[in-house]
Length: 120
Image (cartoon, rainbow, N blue to C red; front, side, top):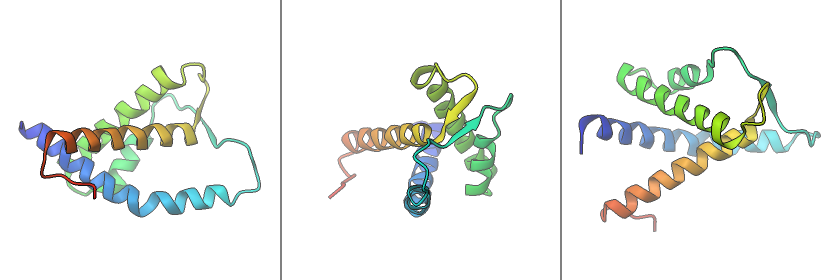
């Protein structure tokens, strides 16, 4: 395993723990809304969310850079492959769903590759 791959795996573990702590509360707040409208935000010329999310999760510069790169890749995939028709807005629910799905698939791939990992 290369050093950068190992570091990314560490960043993904950190992300997994953070999502487990924060995502349920975020989803409950969103579901408590009286609106059936999707949560949409206008696209900025330069995306700041990957940087802000990474900074909020780690003070370590290396981990923060890895998380920022991970978030930026997910946002790019969301925009180009999942929702290319949305050019002015991002659907936050769709973006979060994609992000969670990608991380779950990554975890499962690591579990298959490493017999020491168990989800029992």
